[in-house]
Image 1: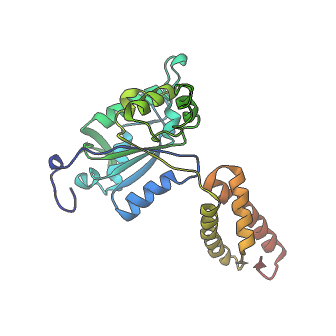
Image 2: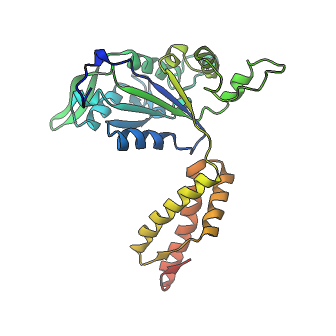
Image 3: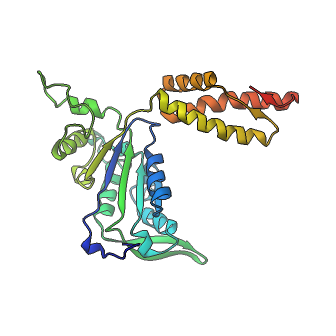
Length: 282
């Protein structure tokens, strides 16, 4: 649409995606790297838990298109090629037994309207306040990211017993679209909303080799940061392996790895600065 100027009417329908995987496995990082850095299309990541039904406390869903338009520099044609990543999407799962749920089913209904709309009103900031512009969402890709904790149990509950029980474990694994929709409906989602997401991608938890590789990158970043304080940070293979193993025990993926390194490096940093040591930290 943007590079080759192909009319949207000649292109296949967009695919909205669901990224399912444990916390810290890199779902939003994957979206940002692929779409923002590699493909370099307008990309925003929004924490969907900050939004509520219009009229209630919290941000309103109509603000989301405005954020994408702002990321596109106010260019409507460029914005319609963009990506909206809905982080923590699984937190919208509603509870039908609790009656009106402004943070769950209410937002789901609002999102359904947003995904079904070809045109919407986007608000962007300007020199004289906010300005409203009509924006097309027909080709904007929506990506829902979430851990969906307990989803496998929800599917297993309806999988039956016998020789075939327990064979299809993760969402998107040996499941057709109807099964996925039914499983997510039991989880607490409107089937109409789930029907708007045509593809599901399941990500695995990070293992020890992946955490070890991320630890090397964090080591380099921390070393540059500490150099400004006159400190030289050196972590050998044994230290990096130990940090990766402790992060694996936390069960929070890359987030646990950062927490493990941050605490120990900060303690060492303040100790060295406080004692005016020679600046060699090992």
